[in-house]
Length: 124
Image 1 (cartoon, rainbow, N blue to C red):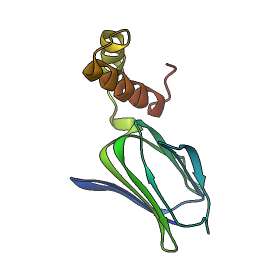
Image 2: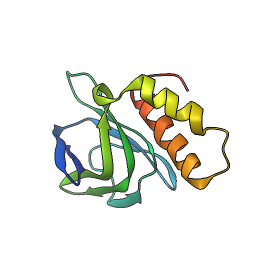
Image 3: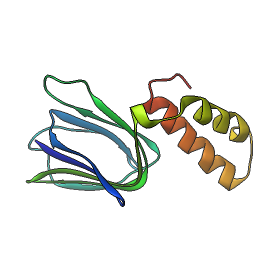
Image 4: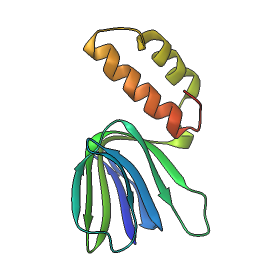
């Protein structure tokens, strides 16, 4: 199926995929070819695009939408960070600074850092 991973400032990736794994406000989704049309609100989490004959493409997404139609899947995220773009020490430091806070901004920072670390293949 055709998949596009898009951020406001760039087309991150476009191509053929076997499955797209993402998390929306309604839970985890696995999108296979010929999936029913769907529109979902993304939460801070990794998105995995499984490509035939290639390594999985993994990205941390921060907000946005997942759209499934007959034409394919579009991941339209507010922020996209590919796994190889993530600064792991910085993400770990951000998580440590914010994880025990009750402040809403710190909670959001912890969610973003967790998504980055998971997308980079790090344990959280």
